[in-house]
Image 1 (cartoon, rainbow, N blue to C red):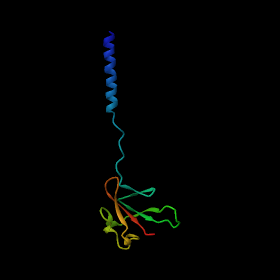
Image 2 (image 1 turned 135 degrees about the horizontal axis):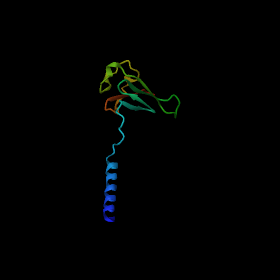
Image 3 (image 1 turned 135 degrees about the vertical axis):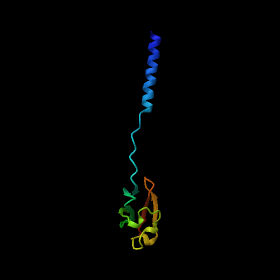
Length: 111
């Protein structure tokens, strides 16, 4: 009788371990098109990140999410920005990948 109880106990433990191993992991939130902009995050589908040097030496630069020009929706390079977009004139625009693999833009204003 003991031998059967021991076998049942081993199988019971194995069954529990199998259930625990097969439990589903919590679902990851779906990608949202976000990308970092300083301490904030911008939405690549509706905004771009503009960085401004600090007016005070030694202070960190400022970061702001600005409205994305309509012609930049779905674009993959900085040529979509109108010529009158602040700071783009200085060719300080770069692309970054958002969490959904869409293209985000970071425009750095000169100091």
